Image (cartoon, rainbow, N blue to C red):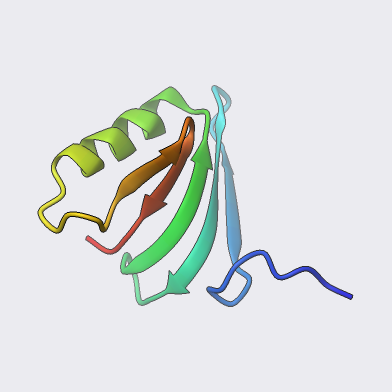
Length: 76
């Protein structure tokens, strides 16, 4: 029996930046940069990017922080 980890076709991306990593669990895998995902990261630069995205979000509720290092990121 396999585990379903993602609703986006079970696609998961793991990026290792040397100074931390980021894991994207796709909720909805769209075209190009249009996607929704649950994200875990311990990379300082990505945390800053996600925090900025949340603070500058024009559509409230699209991007938000779930817990320390965990985010829900939606389409731009």
